[in-house]
Image 1 (cartoon, helix red, strand yellow):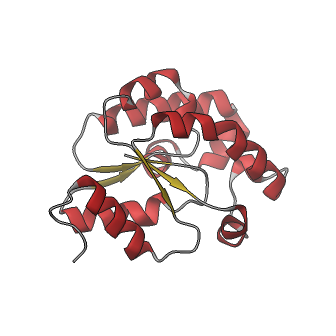
Image 2 (image 1 turned 120 degrees about the vertical axis):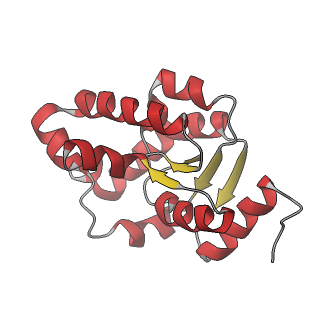
Length: 164
């Protein structure tokens, strides 16, 4: 399971990690979008609590399946999600503010729409203790190629596989 703040690279790293492990991949935000429409539209029409309810349902389903799962940045806010993650291998992807700024420029993320990087800082600081509490390992993605991050995660998961 991959957790971490917006812009940490959970989706891109998750896809490559799944390929490397020969496993399936699922991104909770993408599944929510497939089933319910754009996240920004859900926020606008129904509010954050409605989005979180939809997210909770999707995350619960994904955590019961095999493979690599990338959770939306706010999924850890849900108590039942945190309980479900407690006994699973959880990788927290961390990212520096300077690295995330270029990654998020031009994105349309609902929680950043009214505050940009100030909103990201606030959200990241609020969620950081939850991420760290749930994490089995923390891997920084700030200024490293995705392939190196994936190598580190594979080595942590299975030291025998190690780096190629």
